[in-house]
Image 1 (tube, rainbow, N blue to C red):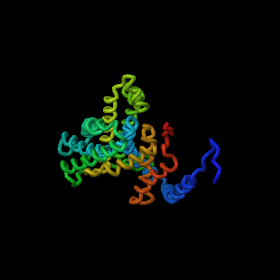
Image 2: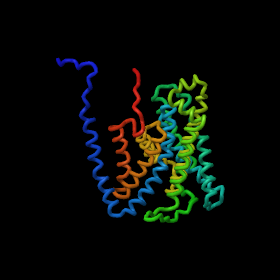
Image 3: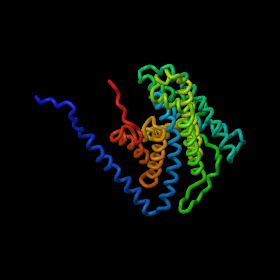
Image 4: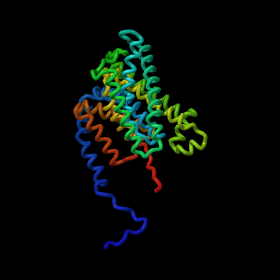
Length: 340
């Protein structure tokens, strides 16, 4: 019989955890080599790909913010969030058509963006009120299954209403080429990036500088204590769903401008990548979601350009595995100890 280990002695680190950093580094050697070689061969092309990656990452960050806000206040992964993103793109089509059969310009773009955001805000509030609130105090598996059910319901309702045939999104912004020094991109990429940055800044100001933001942070810290201090928790949680859904709708519009193909299942892949971004940044951490989205967008774009377009999603999802192995709390997340 082996002697009992002394109290307080450090437990040996499992072999799998010790080997994880080396395995992750080994797996990253080939993609990193291909990207660095491409950057050395054509710096101008590399800079252009960086701009496109940051633009795509801005869209992922908007979706990831919805995941992380809901998780922050409820500890719930809202799997229906990617379908709100999809419905935001469809709402943008109908909003754009209010400005004529072939709308183009700043007014149709802003109008369709606002219409989609407010329509999805109402949808987010309805989802929270009728799907999640009744099971808020149920065992954790129940809200998770409910979220998956809401996602499937929204997808099938979209197929019933819009059909399964992809639709073309109106070209609200002319996608003409744009040259900035050695960088070559197009106007849509710059507008996508600019709109994403503006929305993220506005969200940060709302969370940090307003009473609603203070209430959100209080609920995120301790829901019961916030309720005892007089915070209208149901109202604030509904507001959180509304804000997250507005950001998802904006992401849907920006994504559809760049890749003008709208269909009921268009939110699945971007939603999963945005979830990876939220986990990478630290689920429940708003700045982490922004950083995670930009990183995932860059990784996907550079991998598609220099490694393989078909292999790029595998590289993105391998980041999720690496984060869970090396730093489960994410880049900006904090380790929390649960009392038993």
